[in-house]
Length: 349
Ligand code: ASP
Image (cartoon, rainbow, N blue to C red; front, side, top):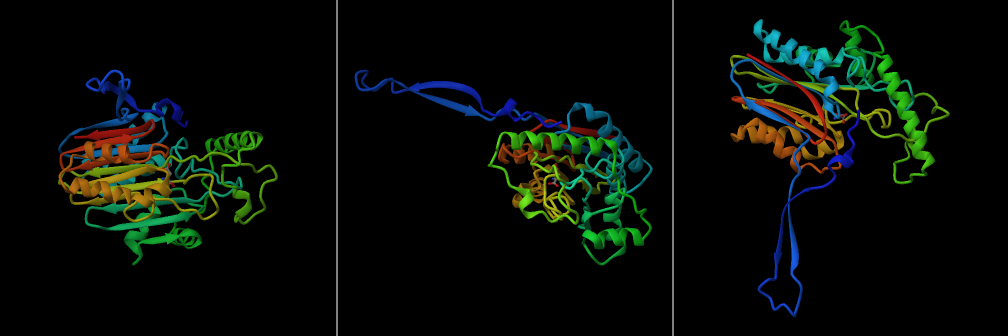
């Protein structure tokens, strides 16, 4: 499901000029100057639109084969808006739909971590009134985004993590289940195979996770190195009366120490909403946090930059070697951009 980076590892040559034609011919040859322009983004879309509006994503790296899932999630969220649900109700409905689809790395389908057992998930919600809440490294719940909403509605806190978040969820009635799926198990096995290949190549440039092993159980005997895998899911919404919300949920990247938390539940990093619109990210969480990405894009919306342009510029400025994707809605339209293929859904009326 990961995109082959070599497919866009360069820049597009738009012009070849020669200078030095006026210099004496005998002193030097003309020096070619190559003018470069950025290659077009693999994922870029957007339009103007008024009224109720939903945009969903299936995580950067999710290809067109996931289009039906993100589209169904957008339709589900739109139905909530049309039934007079709030922007937040709709954004949660969209993200719950994707958490329940085992093809996506969130809720059912969340990545299995290095030890082959642990599933730790992050989720966050935010409204245009500035209400925010999140859970980090939560385990044994089916829909972490619903738990994030419960943190918002029922506690004085913004952020619950780890065992406290899990116990809170069970205490208020969420079922105690490990959301493991055949799809997540297959992904885990595939990573183990890639890990074996890495070791076969004696690749010493990769971090040795085994050295800092901090999962509760013993390290699997065949534990080797494998590449990262992400694919958060998210929804941004605008209600017909002009309110905004954003929600995200993820099984996180799989190749991490126990307790690793990415951008999703970090305020201003993974998502942001305000009176000018709503933004949600996907991609390399550590890099998204460093750039305060969702809030930075929101600031552009608040300055009057259209959503499509704001997300396009943010992705173009992101270092190419890191995966990143963004969805956004503003008062007059929507935008989607990613530096890899990314499945997204749009629904509006
Ligand atoms: N941003 C997520 C994380 O770092 C992963 C992803 O979106 O692919 O946890």
